Image (cartoon, rainbow, N blue to C red; front, side, top):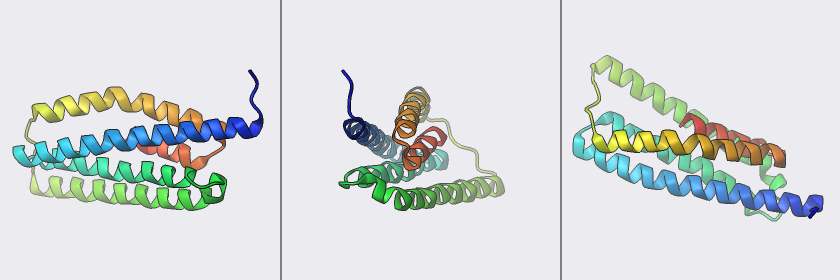
Amino acid sequence: MEFSPDERARQLGRRAQLLAATSVSYNLIEAVIAITAGLVAGSVALVGFGLDSVVEVSSGLIILWQFRHRIPEAREQQALRLMAYSFFALAGYVTFESLRALLSGHEPEPSTVGIVLASLSLLVMPFLSWAQRRTGRALGSNAVVADSTQTLLC
């Protein structure tokens, strides 16, 4: 069955929203678990992992915001700008935490919850990123492609 270009774009837009919603949901759960476990274990690294998930949630919310519009292309440039801000926030956070850990000589404490959570993310996120990138390219949406990059990096 052949779809018209408009129907194909709507289908891809729905897929972009589903993938963004999946990413937001996963990262919200990941953030709550990581921050809670990090506070319990006294692990700055695990709390940082959870805060990184919060930044990634913002990226997914930007895509949801963009594709909730009647004409998502009208929000593409604004979405890219917002995505750039979230990348800068992530880079700033990673730089700050890295310097702080380096200067204080702080070494992360081991956490079984953290190890399981990080392992699960290493299994799930590359596939989610790949699906987002493929969808973004098919849509011609640099914002969705940027979100896939943030998913993979985080």
